[in-house]
Length: 231
Image (tube, rainbow, N blue to C red; front, side, top):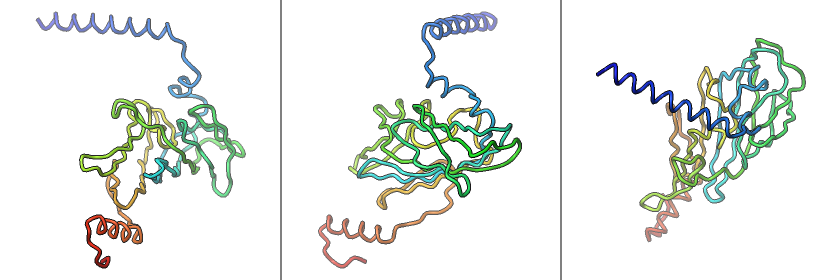
């Protein structure tokens, strides 16, 4: 019985592989698909060591704005770097030390050009600034994007969905699975005072907008019919 089960599984895998091959041959790979899924020369020459993402969500306008510092190591000489950020979000500035780097967009890919070729075997960093109205998820969690929703009590919540479509749906990075940050990642999220940011990783600290918190308490008291002094 065990031999029969193994044989059946082998046949099933063979049939599935054959159907996938036929499907792949019947469709042309687009330029954007190639850039997304390939180890391009502009990805190959550098290795991600650390991300430091800072992002702020604006509930009223459904926009976000942030930056991502990328610490990397050069595996070979290079001067043109591929950074992924999906439309309609846009990179506004890229800094390298005290200099601003030139960049160009090609669909969901940005080409960042260094002033001169970086040699092999060094550690360096750039910071990427970006903003815009991100893609809204039409069917979370199955379809990637941002969800601007309301919970059962009518309170707002914001959720990111990016498995499959890639994290570049909401922040700029090297969006390919073979290169994860060797030294991990810091994530700093700024949200309205009445919301709580929940993220991967270990919580290090929470800062509050004192003035915003006072205004929130005052508004809640007015809504509750309490016109006494704000304490």
